Figure (cartoon, helix red, strand yellow):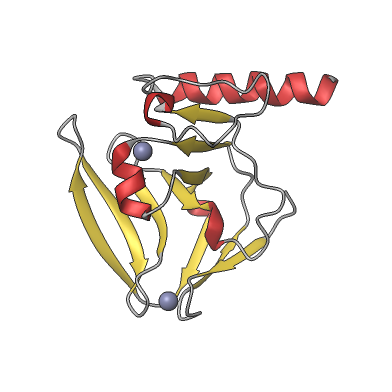
Length: 155
Ligand SMILES: [Zn+2]
Ligand SMILES: [Zn+2]
């Protein structure tokens, strides 16, 4: 994707600039993400937190994960749009919600998690890595998505 990339919440009170290359992009089909987004799945870009400059007032919400870790998500204080999240397991990484980008046309999941609760009308790209649940380790997701990216580049 073209960098720097800009984005905002729904109302525009929060804006941001992403200047770092995303590590990978995932779609999560778990029930929690379905509840949180009110939608079929969550699509997020994993980016280095230091490459994300946010302006405007954010509200921080905390959620204790199944593993007992505190995950934080940051929403616009005015309209409530979730901009990004930071998990305790990877505090230097942000999960930037793809729909907040001003141009998300280039964004495509490179790995799918929790496909066992995927809504059946969502079809996945051929060959895209998928996990019934999710791997313990973030590096496994990273590796799977990099392999997929490479295989697409060669095709
Ligand atoms: Zn807003
Ligand atoms: Zn999820």
